[in-house]
Image (cartoon, rainbow over all chains, first blue to last red; front, top):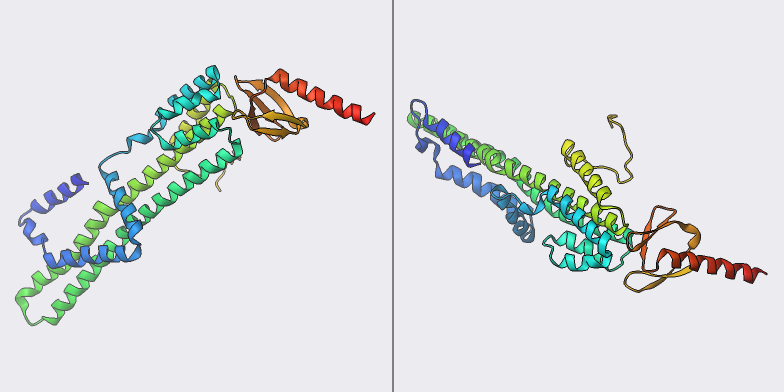
Length: 262
Length: 63
C-alpha cells in the first residue's frame, strides 16, 4: 500500500510542473474523507465498527496463527499420540495447544461427545467466525464504492461553484482543478486503501475457514481411530485441492462434477 | 441391544444389529451401518460376549 502511494507521489512530482501542492486541498479532503467515513459510520452500528477496526491490522501483519501446513503436521502428531496412548491421552496434549479451535475440538473428543455433535458444533463455530469476517469485508467494500462517489460529489460541488463564478476568468482553471482533486482523493482512497484491505480480509477469512475445516476433519478422524498415515494423506490431499481452487465451496458428500460447468 | 460405556464412563445402549466392525485403535471404535463411528471403553472381546449373551437371552425367552 505504501509502495503504490509512493509511486503515485513520484508520478505527481515528475513531469514539468509537478508539485505536491497542487494536489493538496483541505476542503476536498473534508468532503471525501468526512463524507465517506460519515456514511460508513451511519451504515454500521458501533459494535460492528469496533470489530471492523481490528481487521485493519491485516494490512500489515499476516496472521501467523493460520498456516495450513503446520496443522497437518500437528494433527498427524496428535493422531500418533492417540494411537499409542489412547484418546484420553489427548487431554494432556490439548492443554498445551494455542489454537482455540483445535483445543475445543480435542476437548470435545476427550469428553466422549458424539462425532455428529462435534461436527455440528465445529461447523457452527466456523460459520460464526466467517459471518464476522464478512461484516468487516462488507465494511471495506462499501468504503471502496462510497469513496469515488463522494469524490464525484466534491467534483459537482466544485463545478457548481465554478459555474457560479464564470465572470472571474482567472480562477476558472484553479477551481476546475480543485473540483477534480476530490475525484482524485476519492478514487485514491478507494483503490489504495479500501480495495486492498477488503481483498485481504476476504483471503484471510478463506484461509482461516480452510484451516478450521482441516482441523475438524483431522480431529474427527482421530476420534474414529484412523491411522496417522491415512490422516496425513487425507489432509495433504485437502491442502492440494485447496491450492488449486481456494475458497471454493465444496459439498460434504463429495459429489463430484468432474469439471462440468455448473 | 447391548449396554456399553463411553470413554467418560457414561452408559448407553447400542442396537448391536447395526454393528459392522469393531476395531481397537487402541480405544475400541465401533463402525455402524450408516458410517457413524462410536468410541467405547469395552474391548472387542467384551463386545462380542455381550452380543452373544444378548442373543442367547432372546432365544431363551422365545422358547
